[in-house]
Image 1 (cartoon, chains in turn red, purple):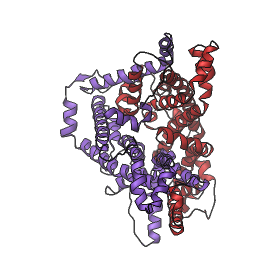
Image 2 (cartoon, one colour):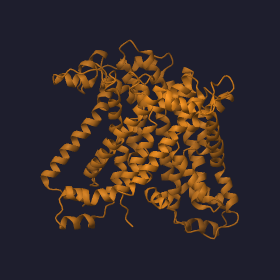
Image 3 (cartoon, each protein chain N blue to C red):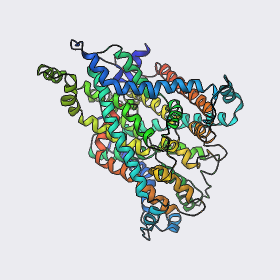
Image 4 (cartoon, rainbow over the protein chains, first blue to last red):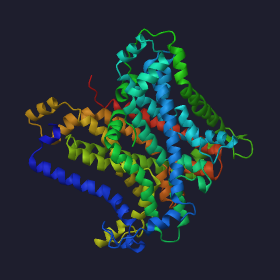
Length: 283
Length: 313
């Protein structure tokens, strides 16, 4: 029994009704988006309800090929960037986290504090000079500037998350392994890394969510339509259909770009909620 | 002391570390493990920061070499660029309204969801989903329709006989729709509050019930003080994020910040100056002022917290 369950029955009913009302109000736009993507264009404006009076797949079929390049190609571009970012973050952040959580080295406290400070740094301070460098290297309009930084542990949030997790792992494990003749590298690869699985899953999930939703850096680095990611394509879609009424197609493609996020959310809901609660990750 | 306060809010800073007798080889291994991070820190953070600090005193268009202009960029920004001051104002209003609002909603909902039942967890999911999707272009598209002249909001209003306007097309309301979009994403701070609410010891709650406290009194005497460190944490994190908001304004205003610069967010203006007008030095000066503003806000929040944040000692 917690605090809230002790309210009086009428209070409880009011609270339940209020919660349901807020939940409906909040999810209505999303439900309506999904339902409208299946309506013929003219019905989107006349029907505020959720059940389409007429049903069509044509928004999806037309939207898919509307930009000349099939929309699946943009989804694939996004997926490639996401997967490489996940690999990079898992690799670089777990290495750094192990050093911070377990190893003794000079200036370790200073380094750790520095790492935490970068958490609060607005990335606009570094993104412009990075752009200049990547441009002079001829790497603009490739995925290198989007993916390469992940292999250098720039997402300090994940180091922080993994450090916290590793600190919760009993040191006896390390010591036992050390007795058996493991060196630090072996301890990391055979003990710590495998044991961090739940935290690594979180790192992977959040890297995916943030990278999939990322827009600013993709907007500045990718200029060729064939290399566009899903959000860039969606943005292009707005321009390409301006002046005509194409909400149906726009909605259909929006639903498609949201679908991976939604699926991930449904599968990992508990882990995501716990991850935010314990580390204060932004949503 | 400032550091102890910081450590209470960000538990990771507190390191009650019991060290094994550190072997001399530790630091060599540490160097190996930290190599990627160190390289990133130097090449992708420190050097770019130095670079942008220097270039913020130049005029640089990416084509011709940078030209030293002294403090001209900063002077122009703070005194002679009405669009910049407008972006500063828009962003400040956005932050000052949407952050407290979303944190308040998050707190209220979290308190009403404190029971660890399946239903409560279902609601948690429903409330959290928007903050997962909210930053995407797709939701920006949805917002364009919802608050457009022929959008869903207006068709609902019409059913009540109210004649709506194009909310995103009207400079009086456009920013309001973006604030609403931010508040819609209260799920992330809510999940943090919820974890805190569920950790409140039931003995404490039961004791206050025995004392005859009603739910409202319980909220103000128990829940609020116990959650105050989390309130500070959420306010700070939300403020940092909100100052950097970009996607909603970009998508809703077609990348212009319109109508009449009413949604010209700070980072949107920075983007336009840096990547559309190729005034790199100017944009970098903007980035540094942003860093300063965020730093000042965070420091202020921590300073003010001594008056209202309650820590269990």
